[in-house]
Length: 262
Image (cartoon, rainbow, N blue to C red; front, side, top):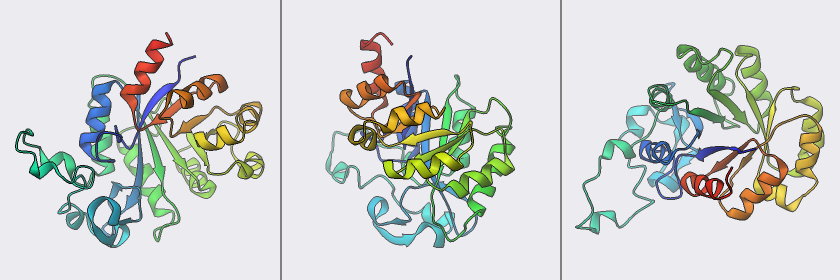
């Protein structure tokens, strides 16, 4: 069975992660899903940022949780990916609005307005100074779009079992993905997660611990695997019957699947 191809932080192999440019590129490539991480700003906006601070992606020491959205909007979230772009006289002019901080609301509205069904996998990052407020704000945004109902194109992921419990109580119809960082965490998680929860192990753990994948499926859980970027990674996922592959390279994985006639 062909797995769903989900763009990890957008088409982030070739574009700056979590920018609207990266997500538009993923949609143009045919990605069937988009993955994002969310953090809460000081003035209550959910933004698509992985790290707690901005040193890696925006050359700022500021923590997302201590900054307001207007402050974040002044930063360039893409220059780190191509630091020499200003020296390329032949490069076409860039629309800088595609390279600023991306709010979750903008991403969800982009997906809602797209001309085909695209699913969104939203990871809440923990620990955070705002605790459960992150999940509360997230559920509010899903409810605004009617995406808290059965058949929602959104699913919520987290390494935090407590965070997923919060979402389950507030929006019981939204699918949940328990992310698994280490194989030895699975025996404990297996006892506490919901029967219908999905499970998200990393590809390296599946490769290094070949019994992990079969144990997850034997327990009755479908797998959404991160971060699947090579042909060998994809082959392992196909062997295990993985339902979704989360990748930095959606166009490449879609081509691989087409070559395998899946």
